[in-house]
Amino acid sequence: MEITFFGGRVGRKDSGRRLTARGRPDTFPHMHLRSAHPWVSFGLLYILSNTVLMSDPLPHNEPSAPAEDCAPTGETETPACALPSHVQIAEDGLRVTRTEAEWRARLTPEQFHVAREHGTEPAFRNAYWNNKEPGLFRCVGCDAPLFSSEDKYDSGTGWPSFSRPLDERLVGKQTDRSYGRVRTEVHCAVCGSHQGHVFPDGPRPSGLRYCINSASLRFEAMDASAIPAALAEWTATLDANR
Ligand SMILES: [Zn+2]
Image 1 (spheres, rainbow, N blue to C red):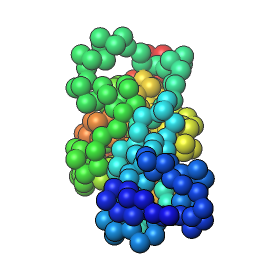
Image 2 (spheres, helix red, strand yellow):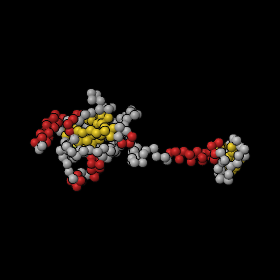
Image 3 (cartoon, rainbow, N blue to C red):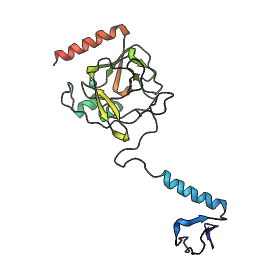
Image 4 (cartoon, protein in one colour):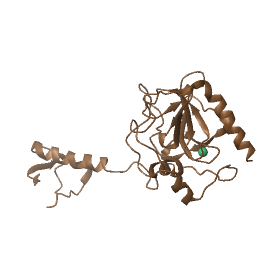
């Protein structure tokens, strides 16, 4: 048996049963193409492939992931720091707190989005990814000296990358399970501003890569030898206001 279907001929291996006028067979799974025009096969494959590609692999309660990945050059399997963070940072214990109006007055819209809404910025299109000057990277939210140029290295990701924080006490971490990944979120322990994530693929001796958003940082150029004193001064000021 043969019928015309989209201009081609569609038949069935067990041709004892009839197809309806709409092409719906009595026993659909056994229908196959035979002697059909090549464009008919192509058309059906096109429809099927689009049906598969258009299905959403992510749960619908999570935003879809940006295309960029933050894997260092040569790496193939690394969690992405291009993805925003979805953790709750407890305000209890933070030394610096501000109202939303105060945050918006202090920060630019991009800084507010990244630091206060746990957003992210594009790779290679941010202020400090390629900054090689000596100096201090302070938290944009409270000026805490979080990272040093001495620990900054080129990870090839397009984001500022550090092998360690300047002072572990100034950096908070939280497990981030968004997007079906397990990542470690990094934020300022003084004001709670989101900084980025830390991954276990950094250089020795720490083996860590702090993948940080430029929008969460404010760079202060200074000689590397002056950085320890700047850290001590800031810590003393914080302790004095305790
Ligand atoms: Zn801060």
